[in-house]
Image 1 (cartoon, rainbow, N blue to C red):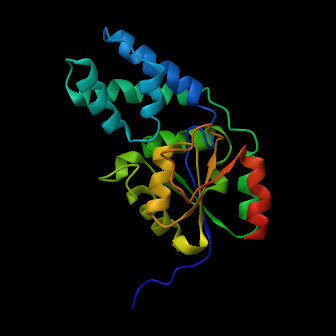
Image 2 (cartoon, rainbow, N blue to C red; image 1 turned 60 degrees about the horizontal axis):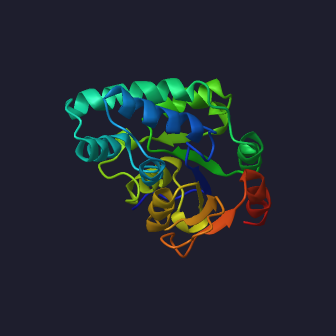
Length: 217
């Protein structure tokens, strides 16, 4: 017999969704390339919002002809991101949303392209770790976002079915991952151009908008 799934899951991305870290990550991206004699662009940074760090390094190494070995580049980028996370506050409404979900019996997972340890450290520093049941890091899956693997693993860790669970994202690649895993997906963004976004997603202006959605599910 298979494992019986138990309850509803709320699965959330970290950077830009729970953590107000995108400005700091943007600064990391430009500083990382500048330190290696390369020049970044806002367009490239936007395209790299979502995939795991190893994929980001692969893209940057090829696009900018970076000479260092991928492992060394990954360590350098990871260390810079870990430092950036130390100063990133929670997004407005994050604490209230997680508390509402917890009060209503939802299982909560953070599904991120960052390393699992970095995500957990941020949750502890932000005082949110006691509201989260599981964390999935980009370093734990063979195929990161936009593949469904991170969210499939997240559902497994909280023992919840996709059909009765919700995902919250802020990036197109993240939304694609969640939809591919069968989750009802909400995106914290209001893009003027919605081409390229999965047709199934809903858009909200901020995490507080999701409180009423939780109450009606």
